[in-house]
Length: 376
Image (tube, rainbow, N blue to C red; front, side, top):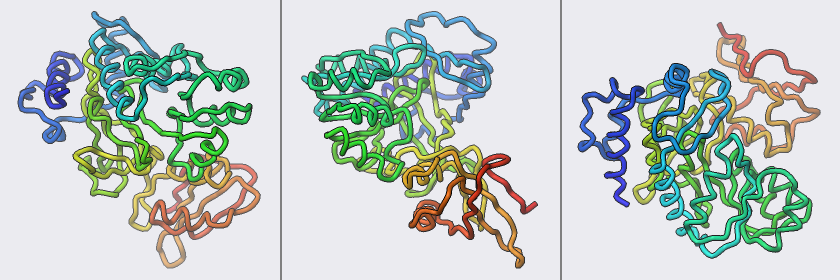
């Protein structure tokens, strides 16, 4: 697969689409490459929602439709053409072959209804030469009973735990759909109970699966056939330095009917470059929406959720309070819905965020939003 040529096909399709027609009118697709892609304008979910509200009927050539929840329009549809489906299956099949996934017996426990879910995995696994059973979600006990007939389980990690607790055992878990490797200790717990190796992946309905782990378990690697990944500072919209956090921006190579060119996901990640590809060493571990500067450092409050989960705390049971000390410097307080502060929590938060907590306040109930800024 010629990655640059495929990117140019996506840009040509985008130039003909109303969402991009004006913003890409001066762009020559033949001059676009993964290296020059950052020169193109960014795209937001809001732009797509505005277009889809005005054009509620499926576009010509649509062969598969998914829905995803959207606070802006209730349900946001995504459409794929026959060519998109073919390309996606072939591109992901290449990824699965690199993982050694061929000749395996695979049970898919993601939903096949409404959401993209199981469809994102199914056809590629078949094309890679595996036997695939589209079980769908739920019925952990039944999946546990069936597990001796299968090698691989495809589902979200929390449901994989339920399957394991019901007695299910699989040599490999392909996980996705929720924070996994970004939660300290979560992978180790799943692997111990399930009796096999667990690998993480990242994708969305709009984009497909665009990053995944290999057996070295050294981060989510950009799947070169599926996407070009960037991590940008959400304020300056410039690339972050290696090892710095920012917003994940994705150009999907598997979408031409509904092109996603430099799509701002709103997801928080940090990036490295290895072997010519973008790698997300900590996976995706929060959102960039409610960023706040504390002590001159950018804090993404949702980044704390997987850390808290790793200590067995409610990942939604917290609030960040920023105040002023008497001398005028910032004071950072973590308000926690818990009975005690776990040992090591202060250190874990400082390591992940670069910020030292001044105080942890234990409360019975939380009032207000995720961030309370009392400095102004």
